Length: 197
Image (cartoon, rainbow, N blue to C red):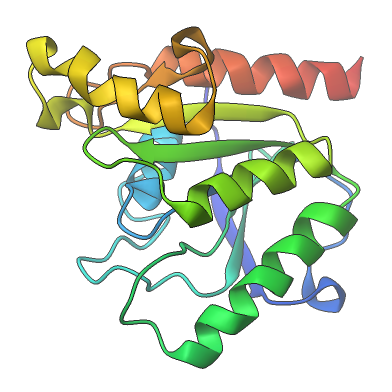
């Protein structure tokens, strides 16, 4: 994928604030601090397009980015961070369900897990919603550079057990080495081509 332009469009919390559903969308979902913003920035080769923060739980809105004037990447709010106010936590579920269930131009969700963390209840909840709404899913495991090659299988095992997904379903990604970058783009492009065919 050659990135010619990548622009922030807007932030929203409800459907009447979303951009018009004219372009196909690929959304990104995962726990706070899972490397979601870093993954998007690396994919589009723009260091500061999506604001990254050392404070987990900062993304509390749905953020839309237009790529090449052809499709949108959508940064969904991170979930599962304890220090987010209770009111924000309560709003997260309905906000996510509404977007996932009503956004007609949503083509797929990149579902992100951290190699060092066992999936928790919110991760499984997200997977259940993606299945419920029959949304194609691209599972990605980030921060591969944080573990040695020998540790990989040991770290992967509980992730595979908890999600019930086979190892080949996941793309393994490192922002540092760019491992998995091309594979993730290929999977996104395959889905976007389905949309245009």
